[in-house]
Image 1 (cartoon, rainbow, N blue to C red):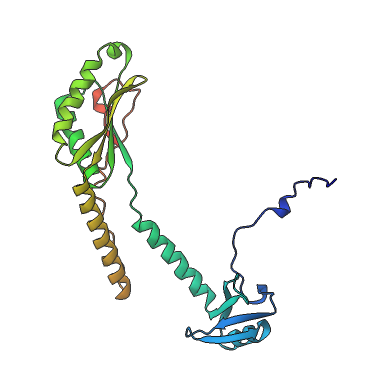
Image 2: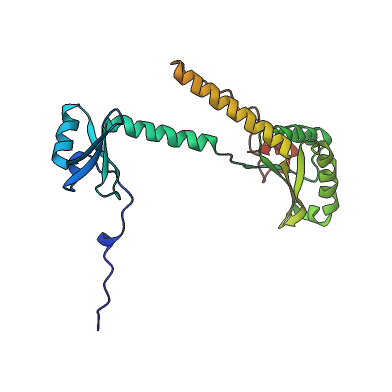
Length: 237
């Protein structure tokens, strides 16, 4: 009867690591030259000697091939380019964040107008907005006050946003979620594409690209939920 093997952390699979120069231990490799041309199959020692004569590195680019494929290149520059590509891919990802705007049942019309402006800037920046009306003490016995506030806010956003989650109670708060309309998201995508093109053009010309500040991010301090004064209510990002 076979004995069960004990767990050994040394046997855990390691993440993929690129083998370079003397870490390539197979007897022979298929070599791609620094100009991208195929140099054919060589012994690993011959390929490594050639790379060193060029002042470059021998890098394994396809370990599963038979024999493994290696390329002669500047490994330091290669790592820099790979990091750059990964960073560009992250920048191009369309990430929709949820921005929360807090209110109180007694928030006055002036402050509501201020919060609506903040919400519009968030939405026009491609973000969802969650409105949260928090109740304190006996305020919870009058949820209709919160509903009245939300009913006042939503018509001022209907040209750029759709209601994603209708008004609902969450503990001692009433919340509602709105999301940008497709036309707004198209404008956001176009703006991001233009910014990426400007970044690429700047890099080609050797200029430093300076990103414009995100106009969709209102510079507002977080409100203090423990403060009973309405003046403490602000939109939060």
